[in-house]
Amino acid sequence: MIFRPAFALTLAATLAAPAFALDKTYATEETEIRVETLAAGLNRPWGLAFLPDGNFLVTERPGFLRIVTPEGRVSDAIYGVPEVVAQGQGGLLDVALDPDFAENRLIYLSYAEKGEGRLNGTAVVRGHLTESMSPQLQDVEVVFRQRPKVDSNLHFGSRLVFDREGHLFIALGERSKANLRTQAQDLDSHLGKVVRIFPDGSVPEDNPFVGRDDALPEIWSYGHRNQQGAALHPETGNLWTNEHGPRGGDELNIPEAGKNYGWPVVSHGLNYNFTPVGSGKKSAPGMEDPVHHWTPSIGVSGMTFYTGDAIPEWKGNLFVGGLALPGLYRLTFDGDKVAGEEVLLADLGKRIRDVRQGPDGALYLLTDAPNGELIRIVKAE
Image (cartoon, rainbow, N blue to C red):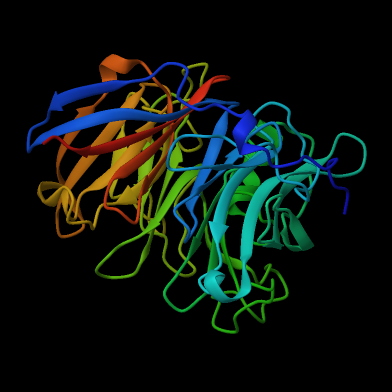
């Protein structure tokens, strides 16, 4: 494992307040909210997690992991993060805390890992986050590597979600290129898949393709394009994911064990040259239809189900970040069917990379920019 040079954690020398503070009240369909910038100066922030002490962990795509305090101070980079391929859409991606973090201090990072020559692939590591004035990652180990590594700087995915039984879901991309995307249908490739592992990287025996010589045992579902959001449904505990379509056809799915979600055979979108995707059809026997799709593409990204009491009018709603059509998309449901949609914050023109519900019931957003922000949404008083 190759590590970056050490960086001291010197919160006193970092930003004391956001450089471009936002504090604005909005009237939404259900309630009034206040939107405020908690921290700024983040370099292409990608993933967000909440530490028990009230601080935030934020990944930056160029390869840095930082701590942000509730007052908005941003730390220097934490030592111990693996070297990443920070090219194209690659870099340091998602972050997740182990379900037993309070006892074991383990965190998980997904990232673009270099291979031989021009090859690379999505990988996941875990390591212990030390408790000190200069925290670092120690005992870092790879728990998952995408197979095969390929020559592409696109469509790495990837979101990390633990289910209620402690399995780790990893939502992956199919690496985009025409000569690679068909591997989303191949069970001997991780491209375009949701995979399911134990935290140490071992494979659950009840994964759908365990024991098959023609399939990788980590695979949970297949036929996905570029998955950028993932969350557990608060009532069923089922995994939900979203993925980019090409020209149209962004999807919201409920990946089930062993099922095929169609890419690149069927799609609600078109190729970027306006030609049909695959069969030219939107659905086909043996392939699952999305719960919802967006055409034109909004550029789906991080998402979360809201379960808090701080904004009770939103309980049970799903929030999805938009990159191509910047904004925060709020979905309401009738069972598993989308009943309504509201676009929030479109006037800000900010690409929303991640969306999380905090322990305080507020919504937190990361904006995708060289001077990215951590934004908090609370109910207006």
